[in-house]
Image (cartoon, rainbow, N blue to C red; front, side):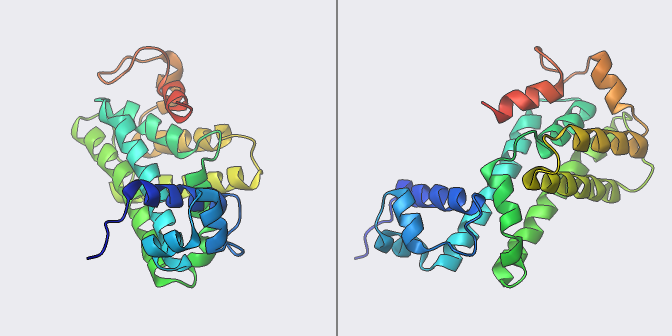
Length: 225
């Protein structure tokens, strides 16, 4: 009878792989490197993931899940769609690139040659677009937003803005996410006929507003919690 795989050991291996990949070890990564970083044997890595390709795909999936889950959780307690949108933008274009975010960019090379990675990348983008779209549609339904284009196009453009400025952050072109967030706020305000920046500066109350600062500040505190 095969013994059960220990979830904690698998998670430790995934965390180690994610950290190494985020450090730019995509091309040179070896099973032995991951095993050493995780404090397990190479045989244990093979036991849980089979081969290096499967491990990298699993790490990519974990990075995507982590990013999308954190954003869903962040807006779950908010009722106001404008507050939700500002929070999504603040988390989507952070001041410091997390290992998960860096991993999604270092995996681009793999996405070009691996069908599983291509599918994973597409699912990641779809999840991001769907999250924005759901908030935009909520704002339309509650008459907070007025559309300049269809909700899917606006959501897709916001994700594209995120991708561009997150890449600038990862490459060190921008020192933080301030410029990217400003561009995303401005685009959303224009496309949805709602002054996101003005409302943020004025501290406009909203049903989902949390005490203790703006949504941007709250999102920043969640990132560093």
